[in-house]
Length: 347
Image 1: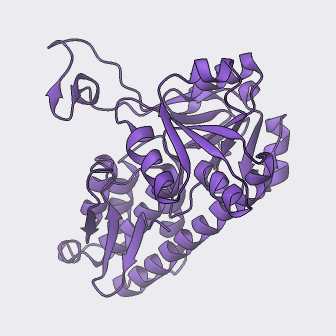
Image 2 (image 1 turned 90 degrees about the vertical axis):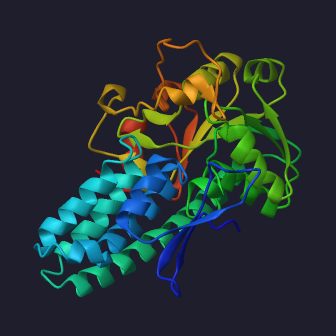
């Protein structure tokens, strides 16, 4: 299994696959401070909502053992807030980031101690628990989702919601992995995404490693219209209590295509991706990325100097376009305002 995030106990560091270099180079970066962790998230060396959450959880631990932080001689609660603010300030849309950091923070505060060593020990154990839970949730998502896929079918996915986007196994791609493990012979279409080409660089790379027959495209409309796709499953970065789904830019238009052509459109996400504190799409903060991602490609300028750029990382798909949401606790069907809390046990 691809180890997107790996805690190296011997070297006391967090190892990450540098996803900006895939598929041509497979380079492992080693993070030893919360600053290293924050930079890896901002630069998208690690990406995908669950993977970001797991990585940031470990970031709290590395912040508490950072010698530079210990030299500050400040109270644990103040240092903890500084570390958590740094980590949650990296990317605003993926709710798993906030879930994981706040969970570690609260676990430490519940110790009612000012001892940095005890706090760091608790942070590490909680981060490891989040890591293991993410793996378990992804496998459960795969178990439920694979039942939707028939033998010898072709399914399409968008961006990358695989092992690279999680602690391992994947959400959307976890559904495909589980289908293959169940003996089903399936083909996968990897829908390309701009500007960072996650479909070609990441999804195709990891599916080929697992022996899938995968085809990269940038023309989903034609395939869907011509009945060449039996279903679509994508990941998510945040899901509201009413079922609005924030995911990689281009997901909304894909969902519209599926609705118009009568093709099932599923979202695969763990419980940690649901944000029950908000209801509608306009409550989701959409991350705006650097304009250079659009105007340059591999460092080469491809757009006129001075052109205006609008580069949101995500769009939001409304619940009426979603056939179902595949979670670690089962498949959630419409009406989502009622079924999400019923299936997940969340309020």
